[in-house]
Length: 121
Image (tube, rainbow, N blue to C red; front, side):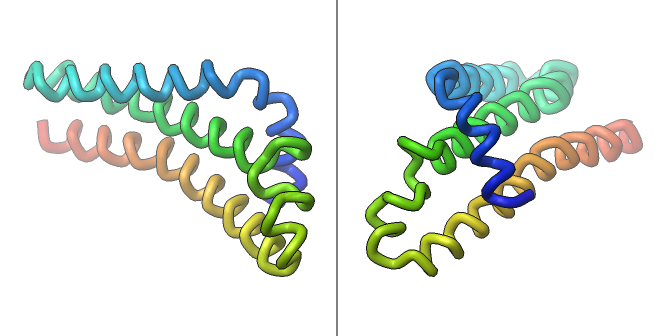
């Protein structure tokens, strides 16, 4: 996924960045609470549902904050884009690939964990 792909998504996501941040923080609190309860069922359900929600919300918040064309930190007229355009291009591609890997790990990591928990039980 290229920076252009994330730019197109960021323009739609930017107005919802506070909701994405709040969802991520709330999911983090729920994950912590499930760990403190110590019951295997609550931890398993939390990992299965809440962890992917938290990762997706945080990833989309990062995409909105980094790639929004007029207010994002990696836009072409930011400080880095004005002073070192080649480095800005590298940073944009790195961020685009990082987001793809982050979202994939946030989805497939809990799935892999659940499959191993099911085998152990």
